[in-house]
Length: 606
Image 1 (tube, rainbow, N blue to C red):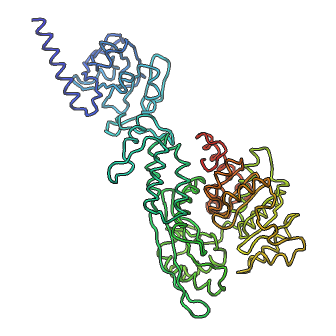
Image 2: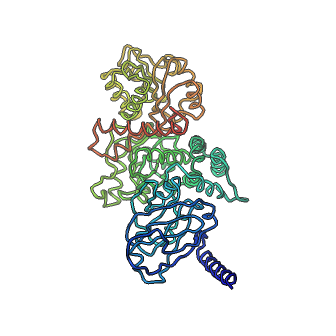
């Protein structure tokens, strides 16, 4: 009879335990106990309730665990072959039959009392389980002398530890990493998965080539970026899926721009505006005018602008626009008519609370004035919350920021800009701002260049000569060669290549892909120790690799051209000290990220 009674009780307990397991889809519940009504009195170590233990608990040695003595919380738990829970007086005063649940997490390392009250307490059995318990946001206490702050949780499905996801940045625990790797990155002709970060980057590059193989500039940007992100894909595979989303812009507008030249002939050009990503904030980005502007270039610049904006930490989205219109060989009236025609169509997609166009290649104060004048004719609203739309901001700040990045790079090598002979490629507003800032720090600018060639001052360009060059270049369509008429020491196109001039630093601020592998080798042979981009995509991907192998410092435009975003974010309140502090912060973040991913000194990887 006793054996039969024990067997019946055992079967009843088994059925009860099976019901609990069937009710909880996670199958992590160890058992169910009922609190019995007990008179309040001195605490004893005798259990007030029994808990049916999971198989994993039976393999653990007996361990005593004390929970924080909050009201409505279990204050004692003995884990072993006969797990027991001592209830607090507040719980003992509850009506008999109140259901309580006890469950295990991560095998038998964590045992939690799951109560109907707003302050459930989690009890841990080993010190190794403490980080996991704290990460789950639970109140913990143990006889090991480790305590955590009590938190309030709710009994919802999302509060289950199985469903919690830790926000760990680029770091990832093994469980979540495996789950992301098991997901297909692409589902075209079968599921395509990756096992390593390098394999993920190759898959993303291959997808970009499949879709847009005709856009060379865009493919170059995707290739260099995904190769740099491969170590991060290894550490946290979910970022490969984020990168896949970034490969496609949110909106890409291409339209016809018809305008009339001075002869009365109707001319046609292509206008572009790509609103690439608004994940960080409202769209904002430059307008570029030039015969080299095409859909692939605009798409590439928009993609790069996403990462450039993320470095600043400001709430700014990525957008880029422009046209294949060359303003250098046009009259002032032709430029005005083109800008008005361009803005007539562009006004449908931009605005103070939608998208903010800024100055870029071939777009200076005059062009922005023509564009804004036409926008005002079409729209009455030109500001939003006191934020001006298409106003002149920045000035020489983008060029100054380029020099400040060079200063920060030299400081890491215990050097300064004082006395450094600097090669400047280009003669636009950023190139002239770079020269002016270099003079402030005691450096020696040597050259300027444009489509016609380059001018070289062996003894350097001072403030007076720079003013003369600025006056020349502000007149539309003039070439840099006119400068030799006002200087007795300058040479024009001597030597034949600007890269043959000995220098310490090179600041390319001119055309896209103006520096290739041969140019980097020539610069390194002539003593150049650093290349700091002052323009968009001046250095080819192959030239970057050569610079790295030759030990030449390199700062990509994604980092060096963040001065524009800093200027627009701070407005007119930005001073030189604030700008330098922001540049140093960005440079320190990039350098730290590069070091963390075993690419010390590589700002492209950072």
